[in-house]
Amino acid sequence: MITLLVLTKNRSDFLIRLLRYYEDTGFEGCICIADGSGPDHVERTKRMIETLRGKFSIVYKGYPDLTLSECLKRLLDFVSTPYAAFCGDDDFLIPSALNKCAKFLDDHPDYAFAHGKGVNIALDKKGPYGRIVDCSCYQQDEIEAESASQRLDYYLRHGHITIFSVHRSEYLRVMYRDSYVLKDVVFGSELIPCCHSIILGKSKQLDCFHVVRQGHAQQIVIRSGYNWITNPEWYSGYRVFRDSLAEALALQDNISIVEAQKTVNHAFCALLNNPDFLCSPTNKNSHSLWVRVGRKIPGAQRIWQFLHSFSGVSLSALLRSSSPYHSDFMPVYKALTTPPTEFLNETTGK
Image 1 (tube, helix red, strand yellow):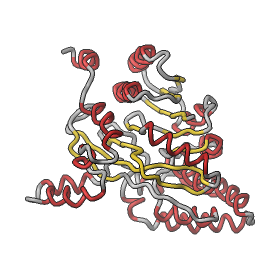
Image 2 (cartoon, rainbow, N blue to C red):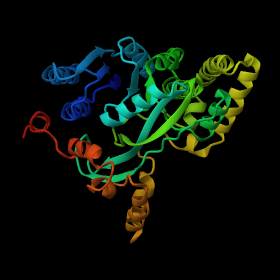
Image 3 (cartoon, one colour):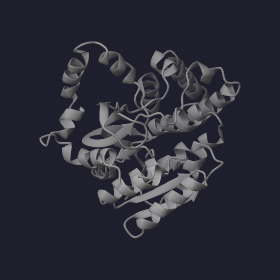
Image 4 (cartoon, rainbow, N blue to C red):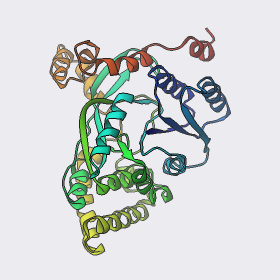
């Protein structure tokens, strides 16, 4: 019922960790992988995939010269399930939550996508394995306004990335219909597809543990603030963004193209006025600056951990067996903190 879309490039260690996680959890869906890696990483990945033959369905494609959006658009040609979600090679989507989201979408045809709760984590060392030293809530909203214009306006004022949510597969194809033509990765890989998902229907956050996102030195940073809007290709990207969304808005809300363009322009101005958008890159661990500062202030970290524990998704809460999310979190915890022996032998020679 679910297909996961995974993009990777020269991070076979992260991808192998992810595949082992889905093997351990008994994942029953399909994983489509777009790999832009060099020969050594491709070889390691293919060896890993061979060991998983017959355990779950894997579609593996090499796309060394394509953009993120082009890769996702190509992968969607191989999706035969009614629902799909993007999963970073360095992140984890929880199988039980994926199934709950799919069931919700089955029962609520006016919703475009659904997700549960999530966390950002950071490890004490570089790479895919280590001790978790930071864990905080990964914000995902729900937007249930009836009109697409209202949903888009709210999203661009307060929005989060939507592509990690479970979507109807046909909606994902619409989301990436126009964005793949852009070299601008902010418009092409984030804003156009996410905004289209909001226009297509309402979104829901369910009470389940859905995603773990890892911040680390090798991660892909999409947004770069001032450098983005001063790029010579920025305006051409914005025109594709505006016209694509206006066409979708006009169709969804039965309004004129002129009115739809005004709605997009107005909402986008609100986005540019948001200091969090321009001053901070798209970063899975953007709160880590405050954590680093807090470690230098006596007692600050204990106060932070105490206050954060009330969210129910702090590390201490997730590790307690009484937590409703404990059983879903522990396979992720194992994947993060227990490197396989063959991985150590291959990468360190020990």
